[in-house]
Length: 314
Image (tube, rainbow, N blue to C red):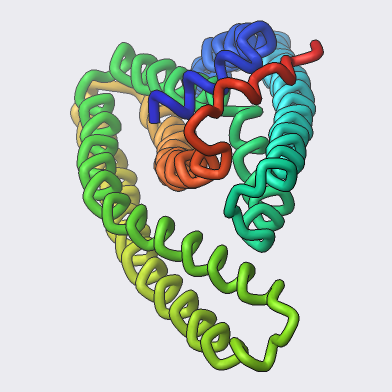
């Protein structure tokens, strides 16, 4: 994983820093709407309801939401264009490598290079665009929201935090198995593509068909692991929501907290479920792209350093 991130940073450090700054700003705003929501709910439950106060709170909440959305739009645009530029750069380097192979007479099969340029380069490039900013946004959001919930009611904050730890354990265990299937699928697909370039396709049709069956079986086993993990993660999220409502209801009934805090905590759970699910998917994406990166580096031969002359142009 560190080799992959080192390569991404080397190619786009300046633009990655800008994306990280935007990500931190977005994460810092994540819990602010919850505070406005809490104040609005508590204001409605008081005997002295002032319309001006309600308008002020609603305007403030909407302003924060709009600012956050604007920053997310800017982040998404810059990350997307960076990803496309990385795709172009990878394809350019592979094209140069293909020319060198032709001149030197090295044995790299055409189908493998074709697959790398058309599909694998796109997957790695897209990942590179948000490789740093995406986890910063989501981890920052988790810290911001859980910190806010804990500051208003520590017991509810503990429930929110306890939802994350078992999900991390489940993903780490399941992803190790999925990684094996990812590498196996890429290798089978490359081999099948290489055979498709043979002039007399009838001679290898049966072997290619068998490899398509192997790809199907590999994907089927991946689905079993990924969907089982997803089921367990959904159970944990559901249990967390019920726990917050039960504990929050008990505290309200005993006068130890207010309704606005419970509502904000429940909304906060929804806010952390999104980042948690994203980080789980992102970890899987990192694992899969690490394998694809290592397989792609094999195409550059024993001296990949010589293909770094195509520098980032921005």
